[in-house]
Length: 76
Image (tube, rainbow, N blue to C red; front, side):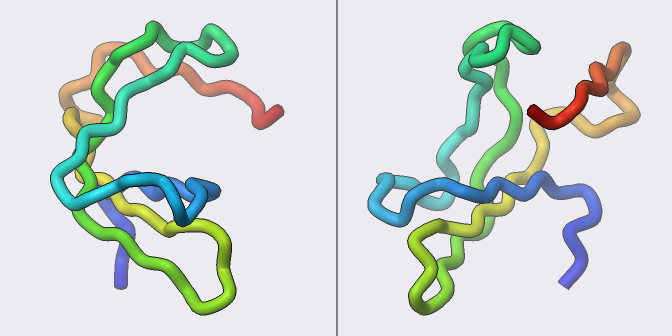
């Protein structure tokens, strides 16, 4: 399956209450984005056997064609 046009979220613990249709917002941790900025809506949730994390796919709220600015930062 292709992840093109989707956002992939990893390292969300499996006991978190995440359901299809949930909206992911920025938290402002690290001060790179303002808090509460909508990133995407949950369209797929998967958990592999013996994996403590959920694998979540989001449909982006905005496509890259709609963005005026993109911030590219290094992974901490």
